[in-house]
Image 1 (cartoon, rainbow, N blue to C red):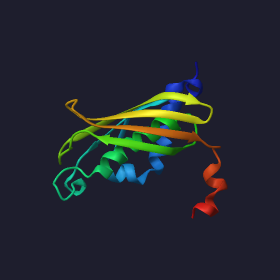
Image 2 (cartoon, one colour):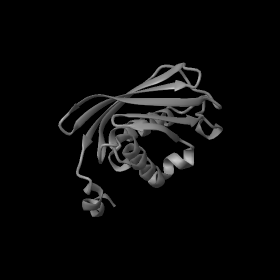
Image 3 (cartoon, rainbow, N blue to C red):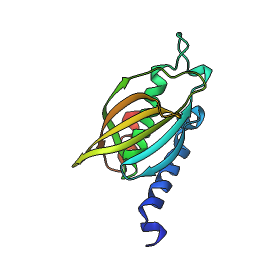
Length: 150
């Protein structure tokens, strides 16, 4: 099998291309540790600027980490958009916590995919559960809609 046809190599290349364009991930220090078709693992350290008025991680950052991991898991196959997403916060995360999110595809039917993402502290403590639904779009979707999106 050549490197061009190796799914693992293709997934990593596509993830690296996405990451190069993803200033949010880079600015927040989100690392994409693993990618494969329908699967991704990402991590992020909670910083002081991510804490809310109660001194715990703002839920928006937890959602962002889960949504990012979901995105990398489903976009490896081609261009996809989130169609819906839901998160359940189970425990708070604190400044200094390293969070690891693991996304796995649960079902695919036509252009629709369903993914579950578990967000845990590095020690394994569950923080949140996320479910996202994706929809595949043509690879030129963003170029074709650039004028309407701006």
